[in-house]
Length: 483
Image 1 (cartoon, rainbow, N blue to C red):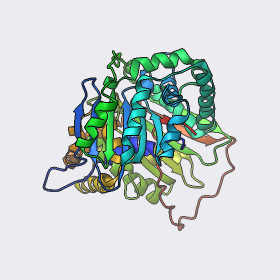
Image 2 (image 1 turned 135 degrees about the horizontal axis):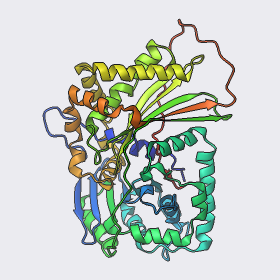
Image 3 (image 1 turned 180 degrees about the horizontal axis):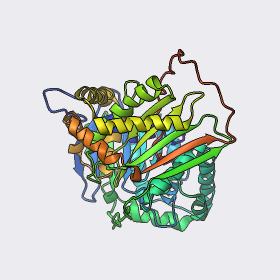
Image 4 (image 1 turned 180 degrees about the vertical axis):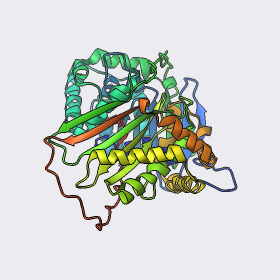
């Protein structure tokens, strides 16, 4: 089973997914996914995206609980429970869930983020009832013992060592995240701190399960070759009998005012090439009013969205100090979000030169603003980047599931193209001035240790390197079940 470190889920719940619903029609209201929805008596909201291009379906069950909802001192319990959900019920013993899915030609996995936990299966359309039966079963009937739980805890500790402790880039991201959020639980790593993971036990997992895993705390999204008339009886049969539970409200510690910028430097002998990052606190779709999230998406695209962006043209092509430079922004969150910028120096250049060049781009943008042409081109690129989203079996389930589980509505998703199209130059400039505040930022430097010997700068006549296509990861990458 694929490790859920970042692909494809991170790509779909990170910055890229927010554009995946951008089917734009210039003269008519865009029907992005045209979903149908209903709610069971037990509170389970069901969403259907019909797609009859292939005889297959995806079932995604999203729970409104993530690492930011964990009890104090129990970091990692949401991700731990995600693993343990595969440890069986009386009807489907430990380890059998994924085997059964595979035996029927399907695939499955799960993922945990700061705000939600999700489980999905992709199967032939005529196997939808089977995976519904098993998913509903483990929502209510999970059976855990120390013999199952404690070895899996060791698996997660090893996962942390391999994914975080053995990766300087991941360690820097973890340290930056802890520095960016002074008090909010987003500062905690999704996978958890090692000392707290090691202290988790069976009682912790069962308590978290009983508090949060209930139909009235979940969203079921089905996409593929099935109609509403076919889906509703299956949902009512398998999920309808489950009883609603009292679910604790999401009460999270809020951030105090930020008065000073922060700087994090990590040196490691594992680092071969230095890199630079900066993260700014930013509003999300559902939290904060300092700037419009749609304008911030356009800003991120024109600032650092590719080879025609300001950062690439200035830092890489004109100043020739960077091998790559770009930005990211993901407004999908229950609370605040992050606007990120990154740069990688060219051979012979320093992080100080990259940082100075990036800061000059930001200063120019804030002081001089942006042009109508830039904004129009950025909006067009956002729309064009996802023109085939409607044809993807899983994209609709991911976009809608993430939106609903973080507090948005179907209408919000369906109106995304119109809202992006309506973004103005003034809104982009206002967003930039609001977000690019030094006191609400943390800067991270990843350096070799010991520092490498100086390398002669490339000849100015040498063409600038091609843009690096994979941006630096957002500060909180989804964790998930390993092999």
